[in-house]
Length: 228
Image (cartoon, rainbow, N blue to C red; front, side, top):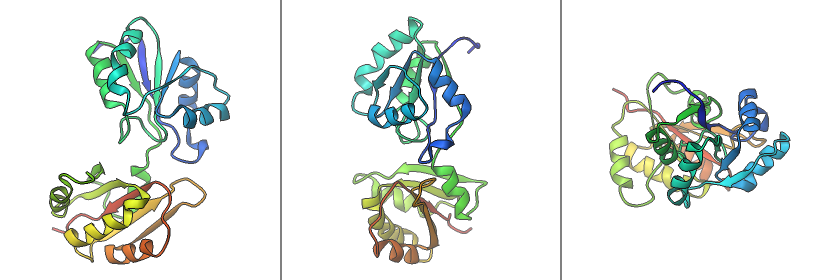
């Protein structure tokens, strides 16, 4: 595709610390006609902090299919938009893929800005090999969960998962079951925030640590690959 006017910008937003937004991201958010936000209340706080006043439109997993056609049509008419999620890079375990696909199909141009995402800091902090890794996002809640865990137990690359705080202990129990209690893991939560924590050790040790406390915040679980 030849270069041309950018219609849609994918703009990463901070995963916690508001200072982690880039200068370029701020410039883009100030320049577009409309900002598509996963949660307009969450994004409104960020925009207010940086004194950005632009029309906000809700774009999330529950309405993305319904709004795709009208959004692409508006972009074709010359409107420029920025897509942001509640935190991190749009499209990474967040809405964005469907819109990107349809915008590209329409022959329009997209720019994806580099910026915050939770998986890379958690990976680097784990001390596990970073030259090769696999990112699985959130595990299925039910169907296919055990099948995927069995497959990942044989994976030799470092594995990165996202998890919710209320499911972390259960997931660690399942990692113990399928990977063995001695498999090294690292759990990072509340990255870049005041109560940031990373705890690493065998999955048995990490399970004991988080079973003894109330778990809060967004979770990144990093699992050492199976040794060759």
